[in-house]
Image (tube, rainbow, N blue to C red; front, side):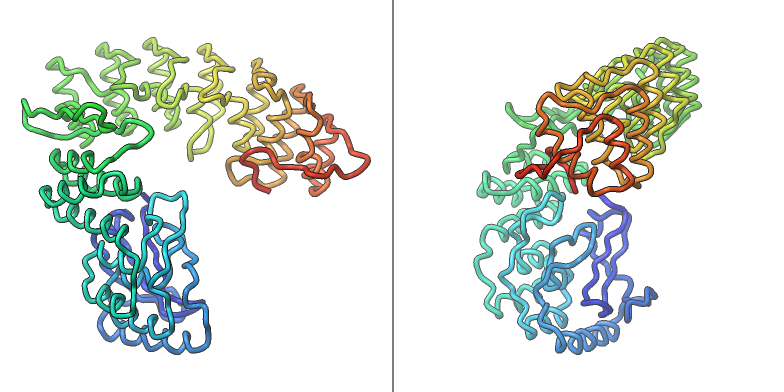
Length: 479
């Protein structure tokens, strides 16, 4: 979840409402408005009834000059795609709901489908109000003729029961609506049950039909001897939180070391992920296994590579860590060193290669060279090619690497993309494909870009004598 939730109830420089909390999920639970922006100025005061009245008055003036009352909000985080009426109803601001309805805001509009984790698709303003128990706002919407909300009201009622920690009602509603509750709602309910650390509520969410593509592993701190098993076929696997894992989660160094001394296996990968470097070093010196993992998770070396912790990478390798052992989603330490939001450290990549990391070992069909090309890393591309990375690991040969460079997974200025293309060309990667038509999109990109075009042609891209009709972008490409 994102750390800040910003919801602007405005058109242009209208009055806006801002909520701030540690997590977006917490915002969905608490919804405590703490600021009001006036005129788009960015300042703020604590929200009072007078503030709301002024905001409502300003909103009325602005709505009198526009008909765009039903447009989705242009915002990030958890209000993407919501209308102003949906947001106002969810927050329970009845004066603003009334104002928007008077301006012909449509209470029957539904959230469109989207890929984000929230809000749920198909929800109306009334369902957002129901989920947050804003009875006054919901009444206004009902009086305005809101209709056709049965499905999303069932989902909202289920969420309310979970949030109120009413296990009996959550079980009743979940079983009644099983098979109709969408995954976004069930995932939110499971997240809430985990925050509550409630085994009974997790089982209620499971009974409601929670069915993700992969098994979700949940750790709970429960009394010794409590049965945490789930029914056959469940996609939730619960594990009792051990004292060692609890100590690691709470970053309690003394407890971690004391438990290890008493013979409790240390959660080494978790300790690495938590940044407890000194503790990990002491445990390795005491003989902790460098490849110790929990379940099918990442190895300590993968976590160290992900966090760019060269000190721990060195220590783990010296202790005998397997440099090619994969973790979650087939990620290897080398792939982990090239992925993630932190800047890539070439010294770390070189250290792994020196330790005989398999330079061509793919994770879910993506090789380290593909990752470097697609993440705007020209120096890493050159390094991998010098160490023998195969450009023909993919059936599409070198062409796919040039496509990865041109349509990168991260924001990459053209000048940096040019450096990646040049590293590929100078590293001996040919730009060719057995099916010439598959290169049409790169030809189009070469014609469009005065920066990238010459380098693509220098790499071997042929210049067409005429336009080829029906050119298509490669899968996933964004022009």
